[in-house]
Length: 218
Image (tube, rainbow, N blue to C red; front, side, top):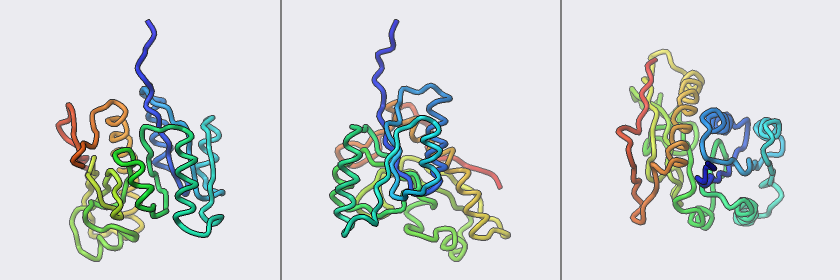
């Protein structure tokens, strides 16, 4: 009997090595999930993750933001490229660009990001330095639906680690990144399997999930 389950179509946006992108692609392949990574798109021509994706036989594209006079022009070109692949979800995986409100609204309920902090704490850059300066005892990462407000939006899942007395921004970044690969792949699996979605009121709805937080020991 032929499996008629429709494939969940994904487009992944990166700016660098794309370690979360790699984790997601590998997870889909290893678990045989009904999903297709239709394209990996970067705003950096020399992004390491693009070469990795090419080696895996994935479709790739590079649209440099430096080729456009305004952010809006770049975002419009990016939107048009993404829409060529008709994705169910667009996954930001280390995509280092602030996206215009019209772009975010176009993909409302379909645009997912991972941020290296426990949102709503420490949005923006230098999150690990912010966490250490604030003296928090726990830190981590957040997978969330993207809204026009930077690093804000309904939370899908979070990873949580203890902050050690010996931690530096670099060590904290390394430990958080390892948890990102766990929490982001889990969240993408839930999306593919229809266990998580954003409802008309902008709230995350879940099915058959007891917990959406991942705790890691030091």
